[in-house]
Image 1: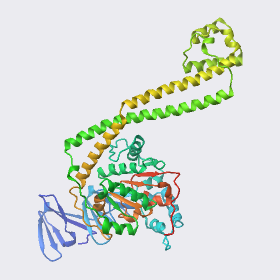
Image 2: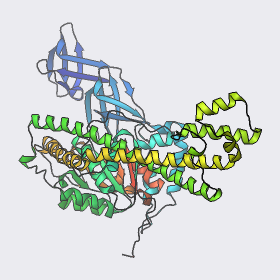
Image 3: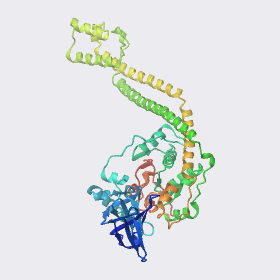
Image 4: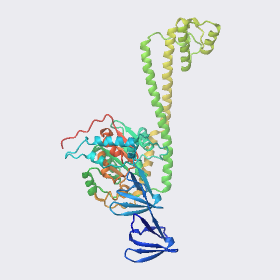
Length: 535
C-alpha cells in the first residue's frame, strides 16, 4: 500500500500497543466482522474488526515553515501526515514513525512575520563580513545561510519580534551547592524568573560561582543548558570547576571539531555516582522544608540590605546638598529656642514653616492677632519681632536643621537595620543553606544518573541520538559561534549562558539565541578584548 495515502494499524487489545503494517500490505477488504489483509508476500490474514484500523485520505500536518516535535523534542529532515488520531512521520532517509496525535506538536517559525524576517536578513547580510577563518571559510555566514526556520519559542524569536521578557513567579526552591552571597543569590533567582537576564560585574565578584549554581539548578530539574563564550578558556574554567567538585560527568565539551574529537575519544566519563549521595525521601523532604525557611530569612536580610543601601545613598545625597548649602550661605546659625517654645520639629513642620516665612519675605509681615495665634499654636513662636528682624538668617538656619534631621533620622534607621541583620546570623544561615543544597543536589543527580546506561557516542552518531545524548550530558560547553554545530537540527536548550558576553558581537550571539528558550548573559562591560598571539 502507498503509505502516503493510507494507514493500517493493528492493535494489541491486552497491552494497548499499536503496530503500523501499511508498508507490508498489498490489499485489504473490509467485511462486517473481519478485515481481510493480503500482505506483499501473498499471505492472507483475517483480523477481527476491533483489532485493526484503516485510515485513508490523510491531511498534511505542519508545513515547510514549521518544526515538528514529538514529546517536545524537534525532529530533523521530515514531514508529517495526519491520519485521524495518529500522526505519521516520513523522514528523508525513508524511515517512518507513527505517534498518537497528542504526542506530536507543531512549532511555528517567527520568520513568517515581516519584522523578524527583515532583521534576521540584515544579520545574515552582516555575517558575510565578519571573521572569516584562516582558510577563508566564512563560518558565521555559512550557518546563517543554513537557517530556514527559527522556533517561535526561542529567545532570538522574542528578540527579533520585539516581545517583552517572559517572567515567571513560581520558580521553586533554588539550590546553592557552590555557595553564594546575597547578590549572587538574586542573580540566580533572576535567571529562573526571566527568559532573559543579565549578570554584570568585575572580576572577583563571583560570576563563575553564580554560573555553577545556575547549572546545578538546571541539572537537578532534568533540564539542559549550554554554556558558551567567545573563547575556550572561559568555558574550560566552568568544566574545571565542575570536575573539581565531582560533577564533571555532566559535561560534554563540544564546539569546534578538535574539541569534539577530544571529547568523543577521551572525554566521555561514566556517571559514577557515589552511593552516599543518595538520601532517604524523608531526609530530602526535611531538607527542602528547611531550605524554604532559610530562603525566607535570607529574603528578609536581602530586603533589609537593599533598604540600607537606599538609606545610605539618601544620606550621601543630603550631605552633599548640605555642603553646597553651607558654602553658599555661610551665615550665623540661629537655633529654635531663640524664637520658639517647641524645639523638636519634624521635617514636615520645618518645610511648612520655611514656606510660610518665604511668603512673608515676598509679601511682607502680617501682625494680626489671628496670624500671631496661628504661629504660636502651630509652631510655638513667641518672639515675633526677633523672628521678623532675622528672617533670612532663620530661613537659612531652618534649611540646615532640615538637612541635620534628614541625615540623623536615616543614620538611626541604618544602625537599627544593621543590628537586625547581625542578630539573624546571616553567615550561619548561608553555610547551612549551602550544606543542605549540596545534599539535595547530589541526591537529585543520584536519582537521575545512578542507573543511567550511557552508550559510547561518536561524532557520527551523537546527533542522531541527541535526545539520549543531551539527557546523558545535560551541560554542553561550546564557543558561541560553534554551538549550532554541536546539536541536532532545531534542538532548543532549556537555558543558555553566554559567559564573557562583552567579547561576543550580536551577530554571533544571535546564533546561540536561536537554540535556547532562556538566556543568561554574563560579563563585565569594562573587560578588554582577548589578546591572541600568532600561534
